[in-house]
Length: 419
Image (cartoon, rainbow, N blue to C red; front, side, top):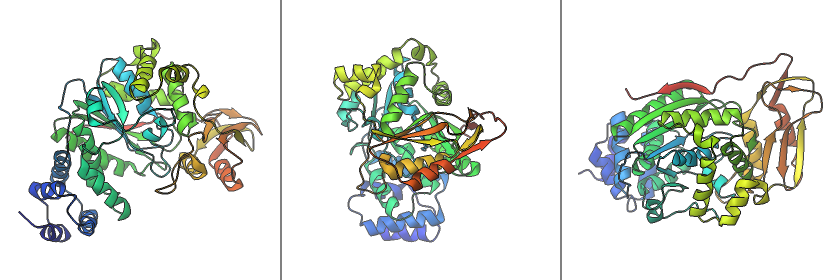
C-alpha cells in the first residue's frame, strides 16, 4: 500500500493510479491533509485520468459512503446545467406517475446556471435535505446529497472548487456518476449541455464528457444514455427560482413551453417511460403535489401552488421591460447574458455566502422566430426595485432582431451510448 506522498509522486510523474490508491484516498479522506488533496487534484488536472482510473475513483467514492440497492424501475437524470433548465422538476413526478421510482439527488446553481435545489426552495416549506432514512421510504424525491452518500466526493469537490481544478473530465465524471450510482439506479439519462451558456462550449468537449460518463456508469452496471443538447438560447419562457417553478407547474398541467416539454419527453423516452398520458390526465401534477407534501409542504399550500402558483410564491414587485428597438423577427437571445444578469441582480449566487432572492426572475414575452414591433416588450424582469442600467443594456444587447424569420432548431445534437 502506497503512502499519500507516494501516490502524489506517481500522479505528478504521469503514472496511472491503481484502484487501491483511490480506495486509500477515499477511505481516509477526513484524515488526509487538505494540502495533499489539493496537490492531487492539480496533478490530476495536469496529467488527466484514464478511463480505468476514472472508473476506480468513481467506485472508491461510492464505497466511501452508503448506497441504495440497485433495483428495476429506479431511474434518474442529470444535467450539466443551463439557463432555464427546469426539466427535473417536471420529469421526476411525471416518471413516478408512470410507475418509476425516482431517487433524484440534485444540486444548487453554479455561476449563471440555475440549480434544481434553489428552485424547489422557493416553495414554502419544501425540505431539500432529506435524511438517508427518509429517502429510503420515498418513491419519488428531489433532495440534496446527504453526508452518507459519496462523502469523499463532497470533500474533493470543495477542494477542486478552490484550486482551479473543477474542469477535468475524469473528476467531473466521478463526481456525477458516484452520486447517481449510489442511488441504486437501473437507468440514467444524462443531459450534457453544449454552447455559449454551457460549461462545455464545444461539441467535441461535450462528446468527450458524455462518452466518459456513459462508459463509467455502464461499467458500474447502470443502463446509461447521454443526450448532447444545445445551450445557446434560454430553455422555456420563465427564468429565476419561483418563476421556473411556475413554468414547471404550467408544463405539468399540459401547457408550458414546447422546447421545455420536448426535452422532458426526450429524457423520459430514453428512460423507457411514456409520460405523455400522465401529463394529459393530470396524474403527473398530482404526483408533484404529493411529492411536495412528502417533503414538508403543507397540503393546503401544495394545493394552492398547483392551482395558482403566484398565490404562494414570491415575485419581485417591480417589473422592467426590455423592449424591441426595431421591427422584425427575433433571431437570437443570448442565454449566457440572461443567466448572468439574473445572477448579478440576486436570482443566483455571486459568492459562497451570497443569498438568493427567489422572487427575482424574468419572462420571455416573445421567443425566437416571433415577429416584434418597435417598443414591444421582449423580456420582462421582476425584481424588488429597479435594475441597474448596465444590466438593462446587457439584456438589450442579448436580443438579435433580423429582417427575416428563422426557424427554431431542435436542441438535440447527438445521442451517446456505451462503446
